[in-house]
Length: 254
Image (tube, rainbow, N blue to C red; front, top):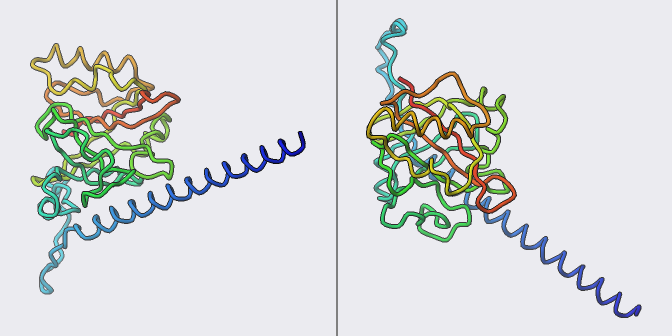
């Protein structure tokens, strides 16, 4: 019996060691993938044009005339590197700062694929296949990585206080920067009807969809969306079951 117990202990120890090795390997891989995306972000930064040395400093423009937010990333350059690139998603003061891919013919192409078309456990965030940048509801997916990268910070929006401090969402496109404010966070299943809402054909349909998801929300903001405003939905895994999701819904600022 003693020998059997000794063997069992060695087997358990071996299993523990193997588990630790696998965890360490996954963490290293995740760090490598994150570093690659950070390097991509730096390489695609828009180089600001320096003003003339003789140009006098002008007075601030009135609030109504303030210039629009300028892009940080050169989306056209990214598209030259990878034609699947659609835009760049950033939530200031969080780790959400990634390119967004779009492959309607292969909806989940970047689920486990890097920007450079290599296997990547982190994948790259991507837009739902039936959406375009003109859709009324843009749905973007990304992984909730254990190392805190990709869309892990989206899970923090379960706390209303966190949302209050991180309500701004930016989407850089080839035509400029779109600004959104988070309206709601909700815990849903992966087959929730909201995922199938891409555009509404009339106001009644829009408000019906909005009422349905608002009823499932953990909280609601004061910026209730109006028909004609674009919505941005960001989704990631969250919960005990494989089909549990958390999503935040942001409305484009007017």
